[in-house]
Picture 1 (cartoon, rainbow, N blue to C red):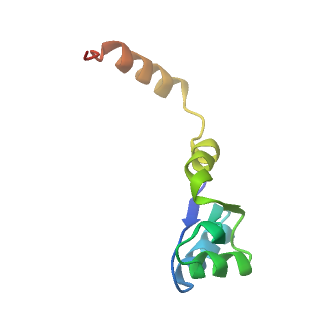
Picture 2 (cartoon, rainbow, N blue to C red):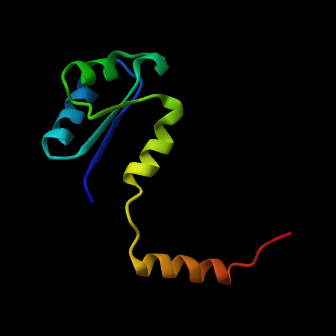
Amino acid sequence: MTAVGVIMTGMGDDGAEGLGAIKAAGGMTVAQSEDTCVVSGMPRAAIVKGYANKIVSLDALSSFLVSHCGGERSEREKSDKQEKNQRTPVSS
């Protein structure tokens, strides 16, 4: 699986440099949109330096990560999950 880096609200640029390293290694990088940050210094630094492949609002971040990073499950993982769900009793 490809590495994924997400930079969210914060100050400074140390996180931005880390995001840059992930991007340089071929990973997917995401910055929280400045308009949804409490403190936008770190995401802004990543965006300005070109380290963010995508800029996503806080509200959309979880959906974005699930859809782009959820990955395809192997047939064995799907089978194991189905089997577990069939064995797990449901409480009422």
